[in-house]
Amino acid sequence: MAELAYACDSKSHFLTELWVQLPPRAHKKSYIMEIIEPEFENQETQHLILSAQDLRSGKLAELLPEFYELKSSTENSKDGWHQQEPVFDHTLNVMEALEKIFTDNKNLESAFGEKIGNYTRKELLEIATAFHDIGKREAMIKEGEFTKCPGHEQISVKKTKIILKRFDLSEKETQLVLEIIANHSVFHHLSVADNKNLSADLERLKSKLGELYPDLVVLSYADTKNSKLSLADPEKFKKYIDFYQGETEKL
Image 1 (cartoon, helix red, strand yellow):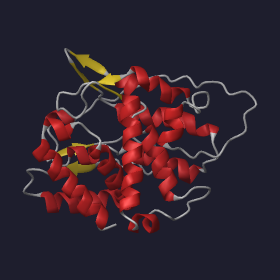
Image 2 (spheres, rainbow, N blue to C red):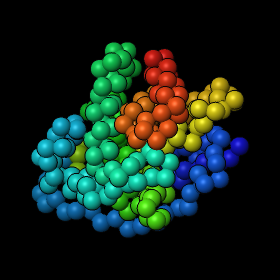
Image 3 (cartoon, rainbow, N blue to C red):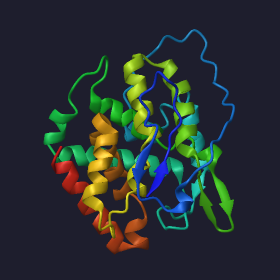
Image 4 (cartoon, rainbow, N blue to C red):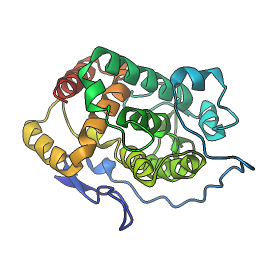
């Protein structure tokens, strides 16, 4: 067993440690970087409702310039998860998959219908989904024909925290979005396909994630549905999809 640690301050609820079966390569270094916030003069905080359709149309380009920068960042991961795919396109596809999951699972509307403040839990999950990979542009490293994005979760949290200052999210709502983003890769490190200890690992994971578990299951389900793993390793892809579908139906 190996430890996956996420940095946090004393006021946050980010996971400080999470024990799952991790390969050695899963360990990541801390990335410290300066992110400059665009200036929005005389702008009042706005309500933020995001859809793939609105983002794809370009109507939010002036309000969310960081998101449109993802068009120039193309991934080609060695594991086949991404194959010559702009982060911009991948993110929009994940957002569309998320909406389809909610459409197909009516029980989720109730599970995610709770209003935290100005937003429902579903709306906050949609925001987190839109920004979950926004740090990949800065994190991306090329190794020959392949790319990888070590530490992109932490960078995505830092960038999203700046972006959300433009909108009317409460501190609690902002914190939930950032927690989802910080931990969105956790299921990728949980061996679902060939893990004889899956039940025990899953119970341990649920205990550590607490109230974040439903958000991360559904986001990981959407992320996997629109990965290129379906082409690179169809058998493994099916095992992950079956797992996420089963866990989603329990929510």
